[in-house]
Length: 332
Ligand code: EPU
Image (cartoon, rainbow, N blue to C red; front, side):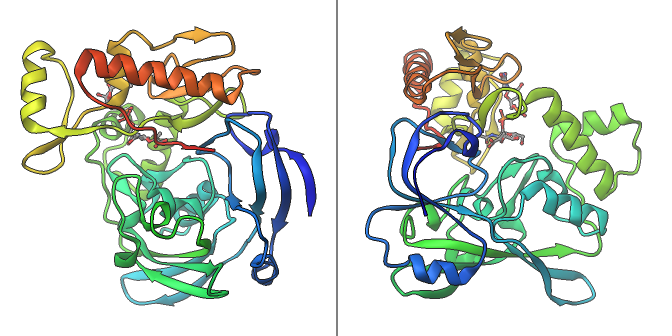
């Protein structure tokens, strides 16, 4: 175990704050040994969905669990058990290269496999809950591995039981994905169709969809290796249809997507752009010029500066549209 370690290399926002205790885990047995650690324990995967605002107390465990194996297989599906420390995009490319469908729309999402169920990562019409069979966790108090089936995980939009009842209680060790042998392609998201057309693809495949997603993401979203960021900083808010209808009178161009018969989702990126924030920069922190949902650190921004900027954005969207944005990143 190391002490007073800078977390700068371990978070994609590139915030330079220390943690009291730090260790890496590459074997499940090490988790048993760490189960009696007295202070708070945090798990870090790719560090691509956190904003550090103060020195972290307790212990950070960097997840280095690796490995992938086929659990079972039938005529239509393959069940893959993937260790939580594997890089998400590498898993997507493994599936794509082996003609296994289900996660091609989720190409290039930063982070690790272990974070995927916690956050129920999603993009371009697919959420990971659609292909998760089960999630295997080390339970800190019970000191044993526990398997949560898809239904146990209580998946919602960027949400799961791991952010609520099980928060801090478990360490995700592996995820079992049910991938298809006969592709069921999802090209319903407008941007994918557009990109496939641009690529000259008339008969989409798992491979061309993954490539389309990679093209779209690379053109819109900043690469954390170049500019610090944690992807979408806010969730897309869900509002009552009646509120949307009222807002639409004043803002006819406001995009929206139906969630239920009475609830619609409105893109936070659009709301933030309308409030004039897109491309805004103050010191080293700002709002990305090509996607207003992404806050960025141009180099030396402090976590609390980014936090403050996010508060100003929340206030201005609330003021202009009466909609309360919720942060998507985890703030530590
Ligand atoms: N828009 C604007 N201005 C902006 C950004 C977006 O007007 O600055 C509008 C777009 O024109 C479009 C709509 O908002 O009409 C939606 O934009 P986009 O397709 O870029 O998707 P998003 O709603 O902004 C969500 C996810 C992304 C995911 C994309 C694609 C959330 C919080 N974000 O973004 O996920 O990649 O859809 O499916 O749901 C992430 O979670 O980190 C993430 C990047």
